[in-house]
Amino acid sequence: MAREQAQYCTQTMTNDESLSMQNHYDVLIIGAGLSGVGTACRLAEEMPEAKVGLIERRKAIGGTWDLFRYPGIRSDSDMFSFGYSFRPWNELKVLADGTAIRNYITDTAREYGIERKVQFGLKTTDASWSSEERQWRVTCLEEETGQTREFTCQYLISCTGYYNYDEGFLPEFPGSERFQGLQIHPQHWPENLDYSGKRVVIIGSGATAVTLVPAMAKDAEHVTMLQRSPSYVFSVPGYDKLSAFLRRFLPERFVYGMARKRNIVMQRLIYKASKAFPGMVRSYLLRGVRKQVGDQVDMRHFTPRYMPWDERICAVPDADLFKVLKQGKASVVTDQIDTFTEKGILLKSGEHLQADIIITATGLKLQTCGGMALKVDGEEKHLNKLMTYKGSMLQDIPNMGFVFGYTNAPWTLKVDLTASFLCRLFNYMKQNQLDVVMPKAPEGQLMADETVLGSLQSGYIQRAQNLLPRQGRGLPWRVLHSYEDDQKMLLNQSVEDANLEFRRA
Ligand SMILES: Cc1cc2nc3c(=O)[nH]c(=O)nc-3n(C[C@H](O)[C@H](O)[C@H](O)COP(=O)(O)OP(=O)(O)OC[C@H]3O[C@@H](n4cnc5c(N)ncnc54)[C@H](O)[C@@H]3O)c2cc1C
Image (cartoon, rainbow, N blue to C red; front, side, top):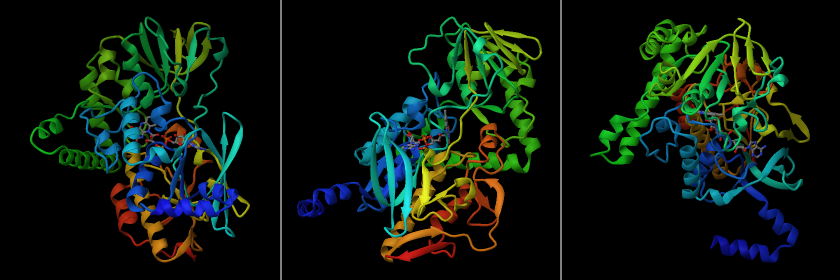
């Protein structure tokens, strides 16, 4: 019936009107990664009648899990809680590899009919809200042809992740132009790179470096992880034996639900314990490393200067990193770079690391809203001057969802809460004939000197202080970084709120 109506409308319209109808959406999502697909699935469930579209710059679904192709690429969150709550992760590997995650997102998109709603190869460059038209105008660049396309929508949702896809973060290393071997950033891994028998130096100590070391050590002559300062690394079981056992006599979905709940509770306990008893958690983590590495590895390489969860903790499956260190296939050096040389890296201590390949696992360059310019009635809005409302919308920006996951827990836990909240809000507006909603901070609500990422001290977060939206001092302008509290705020609290300004249709 709906299709017949649409066909009828198109026949009686002019070509221009029909084209603009085709390019108009009730909800337009920017980005088809884990967040964009998850949000679109929620919308499909909770607002089945809404016309939803997704704009994706790349040629494929998956975002991070399509872009990053370095050896060993995997999640460092367990997949039971990193996967979608509405679609079980049915494998028993705890940390999944990039291909498995990419397939999981693509399969979810297919199953929920999202794939056909995505327009690929379009980079959103501008989004302008018009109060007169009561809609967004979104401009996209087809990078292959240089042509632009325009879309309109009632609601815009940014699911663009948090970093720049064009380039990773690369500090200036003195003499880097002198190095005669290959220099690679993990964000742009060359296809079919053969590193067998090569001496590899990996600069970095984060999740990417600790993943690359054991993966490359299998074939390389030797891998050295060169770090300026150590991170917390802890080993998790690579395989969920308990779920494997329970699956023999309980339904898969039930076992998945239990594993998810268990892992969420465990992560929250570890995080809270790290904040309440940092010294105890630190000793526990360091004892774990000592047990794994034995006497062969100097513990100073794994003894950070900061307390657990002041920066993210790196998980490694089945102690794979520690195993290659013990076997001597890889080593860790904690030192500072003096200069790159023709044949490697000279350290401040005077030691020279010989290398055929240097991998700069130096991190991400943060970016919000995929670099698009946001305007409201012609006025440009800068995210670093705005607070977030419930961590899900932006101050003074009408009809826009801002989807940004957790950094102290699996990203998707927050994404799903935000998507559910936005569906509730949009449905409430429809039922009450409201068509504009704008978060408006009451007088006296002061901006805190903190970004949405809160107190994490990781380098990439510190570098992005001038880019990220801010927090307020009180709710709902504070970002809680707490799954339990966000559940209450985003799923249970009424959407009617003095901090939201509505306009009647
Ligand atoms: C190597 C790596 C490992 C990670 N592992 C974990 C982990 O284990 N656990 C965890 O919680 N988090 C992890 N993260 C963080 C991770 O990025 C998120 O968990 C999650 O994948 C983010 O999903 P997303 O859809 O929000 O963003 P992304 O995956 O970044 O997807 C954003 C999408 O938006 C598109 N896009 C961006 N800008 C535009 C634009 N202007 N126009 C059109 N399209 C645009 C991009 O092309 C992309 O497809 C990891 C990150 C990296 C880099």
